[in-house]
Amino acid sequence: MNQSASPDLAQPVKQPMLEVKSLVKYFPIGGLINPRQVHAINGISFQVNRGQVVSLVGESGSGKSTTARLVIRLIQPTSGKIFLDGVNILESEPKKASLAFRRKVQMIFQDPFASLSPNHSIGYQLGRPIIIHKRAQGKEVKEKVYELLATAGLNPPREMAEKYPFELSGGQRQRVAVARALAVEPELILADEPISMLDVSIRMGVLNLMQNLKEEHNIGFLYITHDLASARYIGDRTMVMYTGHIVESGESIDLMENPKHPYSQLLLSAVPNPHAGLTTRHVQARGEVPSLINPPPGCPFAPRCPKVMEICRHEMPGRSTFDNDHWVRCHLFSPDEPTKAIA
Image (cartoon, rainbow, N blue to C red; front, side, top):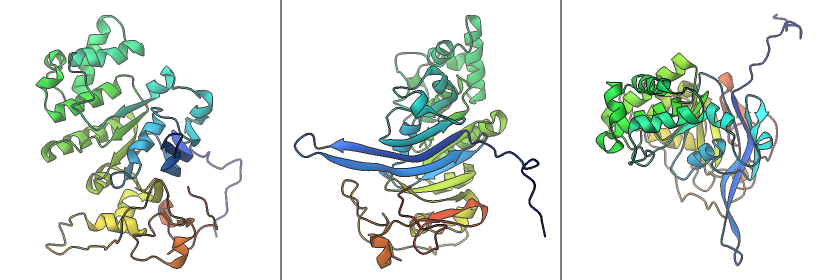
């Protein structure tokens, strides 16, 4: 029988680079006459380590992009905690993010056509963050710009630096967005649907670029997408989000091959399987997505779930954990501990 290691000899627990705990975001609507709230994010918790890609998948409106905007500090959460290298940034920087935070965390936006200024050259737009964050000065700035362009696969870099966004393709613009995120040498990049507006033929190039950055620079990524195929391709871990709740999380291959939650099964049933020929494994779902203004009690997927039970309509399921830290929130499985928490 194996004996447990003594506390003195035990390996230290690796601290996650990013840790989100019980994050909540409600958007007020209706004004003074009829004040209401949109329950956009409902107590989610997750981690991202250095050199790790965590995919966050779900339908449009599930809260994926709101999650990224909360982490990058573009909007303030209603409650919850966000730790970066063990420091709760909502307490240390309560009003707005500092330059030090911006150096560590960068974001790649979905629309490569709107995220770049049409009035300035690519070289200028890459040089600005280098100067602001004091990563180089004088003639070194241009050399740094050329280096970034080469890293992003935009060659020849000197020629690309002189171009304007309207002279580039969508794929090239998104590579510029990646280069701009790299300009401050970040530790974490939030990639919000970075390939959704690109042609299928060039999507793989952007994904491979992100994969190389993870491996060569030890950068962590939160990769937001509705495309489960790309989530599996690039993600070390995948989280499934539904109406602002994370309903399942696990290693990407494990989750894709053995989904536990009925919603995860529904999403995966819509993904073409090249090994299945013309046959498809379709999971039926009924009804509509529940209101985010007046969310029903119990499991958020209960109104649509083909396996719904009476308890699902009244009680939020607890977390049930399986091998390899694969967990799910579903009453079909026994919870680790009884809870009615919304996280």
